[in-house]
Length: 161
Image 1 (cartoon, rainbow, N blue to C red):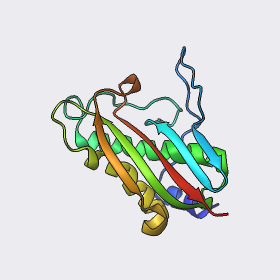
Image 2: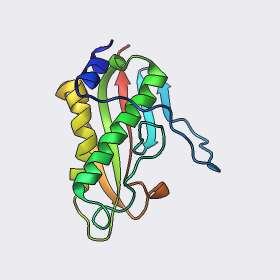
Image 3: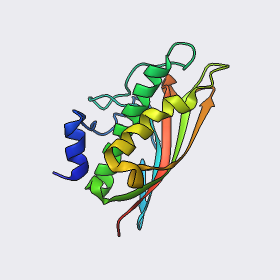
């Protein structure tokens, strides 16, 4: 068992199975793209243990609270880790998380996007530590996200050679 797998187990967390694409939807892009030691991951949403998009759905500042958004961003982290594991194998291969771009489905006037995206950042830093898990980040509010998910996150990291 790898170091990251052991930390996930200690936290009582499991990675979701591959994303179940909703009927009628086609994903004409890679969820993860590896170029040498650089890794880019496409926007991921929160996934449940069954591979489906996980509730709750809606806008922060209207239907959803900051705590619900934080929990959703944490699920996004698990979704990203699962995609990475399927692509690179051992999650210990990650040398450094570099950039995280978090989009929050926000009602007009909602300004607490950073608190929501902390759900992602806090989990990555807890797993990898501040040296490897620390990253640059943007947390922006958007008018809508696909399927009314509350959070979508994309980013970039590097691998050990």
